[in-house]
Length: 81
Image 1: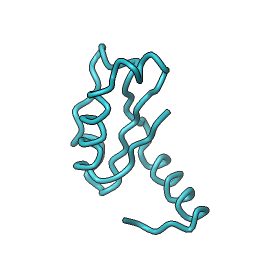
Image 2: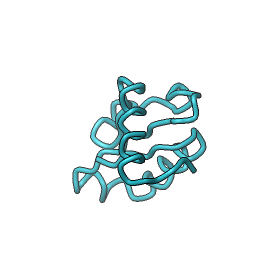
Image 3: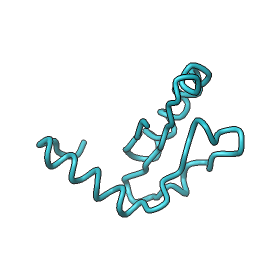
């Protein structure tokens, strides 16, 4: 699982870059989860279609995901940005 967490533009760019190497990622079982953190929510990201199911997922509870990301950053002593 690869979590691409950032603003909507960052998540869109991560999806676009991952698409360029999609087949090798799918072969290796990599699942991309874009997580928009700037308050815009994941509604700004196009939802995955049926063909994307083995490649990309949408976080269900973004509040919990965001809290987890914040916890990880705190433990790693990493600030925003």
